[in-house]
Amino acid sequence: MPDPRGQSLAALIERLRAAANARIRSGRLTERGLARLAGLSQPHVHLFLHGARGVTVEAADRLLAALNLPAGELAAAGAHLAGVAAPLLAGPLGAGYPFPRRVPGAPRLALPMGDWCQVREPAAALVAADPAIRPWLDEGDLALLDLAAAARQPGAQPAWFAVAEGPGVVLRRVWREPGRGWRTAPPARVREPGRNILEILSARLVWIGRKLDSQTPLGGSSEETRPAD
Image (cartoon, rainbow, N blue to C red; front, side, top):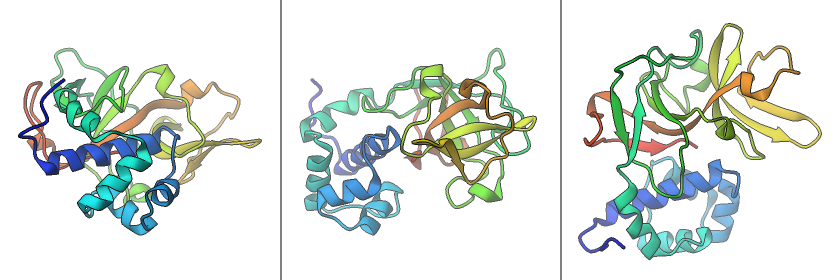
């Protein structure tokens, strides 16, 4: 097990944020439920999850307990945080564009990811401008995607997917509602509702990073990163 001594508190807090967001994306927990279990206000938890504020040591302990995540396990995850190698797809990802394509010899980016968030078939792409999603995703954001079929299955909690809309794709939150099938927000103009879901959802967004210039090929470092939620 890696020795947690010498690891910065800031790095551990970032892993805690990533772990909490991963649990919410997987549908195992909601933001409101996490706040209730941790005994914190939902606005406080919301701002922490989105990287807009930090947490005190006491609040971090409460979040760890709510997630049933031992502090030692969080510290030990450091050895795995540099390990997702994702080829950069060609073309923008989002409104008005077809899903970006693979190209031979494309650079591979090393993106931080912990054991709590598995990516079966990783790829990376740059988000295209789309006013409908501007509060959450912005033009030029770097998206880590999971292209695997198993990842392209919406659950009960909203998660971000690349959704077919006409000849292109849009980035939308997708979830399933009992008795109503799957839904999108903001609404996507999806035709032919009887189509296979795997033909409509091209990829699941796992993680979002800012400043592509700070990303380097495999083995380098990254800055200003945050999980997709």
